[in-house]
Amino acid sequence: MSLIVQKFGGTSVGTPERILSAARRAVAAKQAGHQVVMVCSARGKKTDELIDLANEITQNPQPREMDMLLSTGEQEAVALVAMAISTLGEQAISLTGEQIGIITDQTYTKARISQISTDRLKQELNAGRIVVACGFQGVSENGDITTLGRGGSDTTATALAAALDADECEIYTDVDGVYTTDPRIVPEARKVTRISYDEMLEMASLGAGVMHSRSIEFAKKFDVALRVRHALNENEGTLIAATGEELARSVTGMALVRDEVRVSLCDIPDRPGVMSLIFAKMAARKIPIDMVVQNVSANNKAEVSFTVPAGELAETLTAAQEAVGELGAGSVLSGTNLAKVSAVGLGMKSAPGVAARMFRKLADAGINIQMITTSDIKVSVLVDRNLCEQALRAVHQGFQLDSAKPAPELSVTKSKAAATARASEHEHLAEVVGRLSSMEDIVVSEVVLDDGQARITVHNVQDRPGISAELFEAVAEAAVSVDMIVQNVGRNSTTEVSFTVDAGDLDKGLAVVQKLQQRLPGSSVSHERDIALLTVSGIGLRTHTGVGERMFRALADAAINVKMVNTSEIRMSVVVARQQGAAALAALKKVFGLK
Ligand code: ASP
Ligand code: MG
Image (tube, rainbow, N blue to C red; front, side):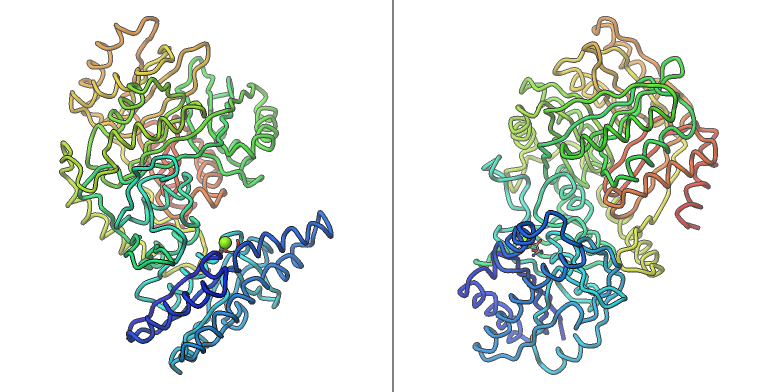
C-alpha cells in the first residue's frame, strides 16, 4: 500500500473553509487507497501574532518559553483539521511532535531533528486513520518542546516522509509550483514540471523562497520525492526529485537576492591559514557567506572578498576587523546597494559557454558586473541593486526560460553520461547517509581532486559592461573548456578576472586572451600551469557554517596555501598548487571522515 504525506501551510488552513478543503484532499487520497499523513502549519499569521504577543510582554523571552508558546499554533490547527476529517466520514487523529516522537537537539527556536520514531504513526495508519501531525515542533531528549525555526513545517513533512519511506510528499501552498524565477518580477516566468534537488537547493539558497533549504536537504539525503502544489486547484505542481529537466536545457531557473553586501579584506598576507582564520571568524557568528573570491596575489598580498546578507553587515565588519587584527596586516572595505543574480542548471555541466551567454545578455542590457563566481551548476553575478530586476529579466529572456520548448541549444551533448554519473553519485550518497547518527547531520559525501587544471588571469581590466562577455565568448569560441570563473571587485575602476581551464587547453586559452588583451589598455595577463582543483560535495554546506571552517582549518594544518575559492550550497572548491594536491585531498578526506 502506498503512503503519502501532505503538508498544508498557514494560508492553506487559514479559515474554516480552507480547513475543510484541506481535509477533503486527505480524505480523497485515503479513499483512493493511500495511507495519509497530514502535516499542518499554524493557521494564517498565527505564529507572527504569538511572537508579537510575547514581545509585548518582554523583549527577551526565554527561548524555552517561546517554543512552548509557538508550538500551540500548530496544535490548534491539527485539532481543527482532524475534526474536519471526521465530519467527512473518515477517521483521523491529531498528534503533537512529542506524541509522534520527533526527537530534536536542545537548540530552542531552531532545533535540528535527530531522530523520529514511527511506531505510533504506523499503529494509527494501520488502524485506518489519517494522521494529522503538528509541523514545526519536536521534543528534546529532556522532554521539552522545541521548534525547528520559521517555516519549519516543510522540514517536518519531509522528515516524516523520509522516516516512513513515503511514496511522495506533497507540499500544498499558495503558488502553483516552482517557477523559473519570481513571477512578480518577471511575469513571463514559467512553472517548471520537474527540478532536481541540487538545482532546488541552489535556487532556495539564492533567494527563490518556495521552500526551506533544510527540507530539500532532507529530501535529497533520504531520496524523498517532493511535489509542490497549489492548495486550491488540481494542477500537478512541480516535482522535486533526483533529476530535473536538464536533458533539455542548460539553465533551469534564476534567483535573485536583493539585499547583498560585499566585504573585502585587502592587502592581507598570502599564506596558509588565512582563509581558515576568516572562515572561523564568520562561522563563530554563524554568518552565511557567499560568493567568496580570492584574488591571485600580487607581491605576496592577497585580497579576499565575499558577500553576506545586508542584515549581517555590522557583525561581518566586526568579524573581518578581528581577522585583520590577528593577521597583523590589511584593511577592510565594503560595498552596499548590491544584488546577486544567479542562473542555475544541472545542464550547465555539459553545455559550454553558458556563463558567456549570461554575461552577453547583461552587457547588452548595459549592466556592469561587479563580481562573478561559478560552480558547476550555477553562475552568480553581483550587480547594482537598482538594476537587478532588469538583469534578471534580461538573462531570463536570453535563455528563453519562458518557453516550454526552447530553441535547441548548441551542445547539450554529454547529458546522458552525466545522468549515469549522477545515478552512481546517488547510490554513494545513500551509503553515506546510512552511517549518520542524527537525521540532520551534515553530509559531506565526496572530495574530488582534479590535478589537470591551469589558471589564467587578466589583471587591471577596465571595469565596464561587456568585458566578461567578450572574454568568455572568445574563450568559448576557441572551444577551451572553462571550469571555475571568479571576478573580483574593482578598485580604482579596474577589475581582475580569473578562470581555470583544462591544463591541455592552457596554451590555446592564453592565445585567445592575449589577443583580446591588446584591446584592453593597461591590462596584463598571468597564468599558472600547475594547479589542482579540489571539490568537496555534500548537502547543506552553506547552511552549516562550520563546514568551510573545518575545510580551511584542515588545509592550514597541512600547511597548504589556498589560491582560489568557490563555495555553493552543494560544493566547495579550492585551488592549490599541483604538488600539494594529493596532500590536500588526504587532509580533506580525513577531516570529513571519508575513506
Ligand atoms: N508556523 C511556523 C512558521 O510560521 C512554521 C511553518 O509555517 O512552517 O514559521
Ligand atoms: Mg508559515
